Length: 191
Image 1 (cartoon, rainbow, N blue to C red):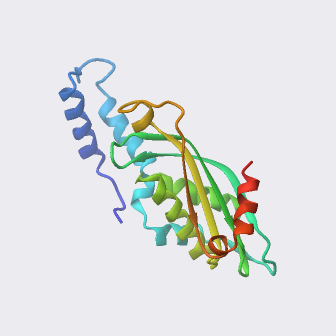
Image 2: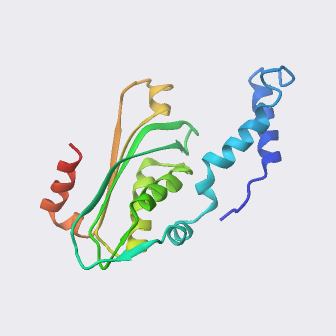
Image 3: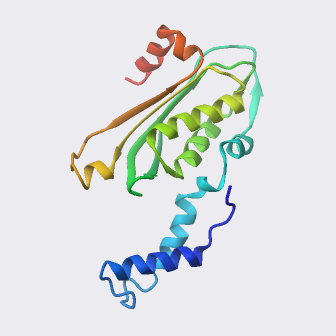
């Protein structure tokens, strides 16, 4: 993956957009905006610098265990930008569950995985599947469920303009796909 962003190139592109929109790039309020946006993009799109394998390696901090009890973390707040309009996906929450197969991951690492995956131009559906794939690699288990819910400004602030519309997606792997009672247990934990 691309390891560094060319901030000067990004700033030049933002400058063109501002001018094309009719903004005065020499005005006090806009003069430093291209550079600020370039710095912001470096931060909010950090996840684009890494593959799923690299993220898995980065957060592979596990502990050995002998149980196979459900681990479930809910309400991990993230945001992302849709790849169709580069519009903000907001009020997003990730819920991640898995059945250990000999090891568990530190809970903060689950939140860090969700955060890094979301820091890409994304589809909400892909956020789910990317988190699930990384969790499977790190925890060495097939039994993973990821549910993401959020609002999309490409739907609420433009186009159809349906404020409050929420999208919920799920990646269901292993036992969560075949054991409906287990899946329902997770859905009940979301209430």
